Length: 68
Ligand SMILES: [Zn+2]
Image (cartoon, rainbow, N blue to C red; front, top):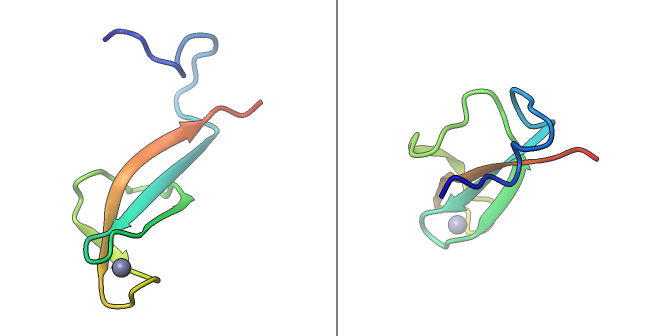
């Protein structure tokens, strides 16, 4: 613990590009999309699955990509 790969060299308030990964609770399909304001882990179901059609997706993880 204590080691964080993104925060050392340059401090910034938020990553230049953040991605949100959503996972379908029914078929398990994961999809990435750009982070939107208000995205939050454990916020509940956030959309409909584009793969199986019937499942609901929820935010699985959120991560930032450093812009180089
Ligand atoms: Zn699905």
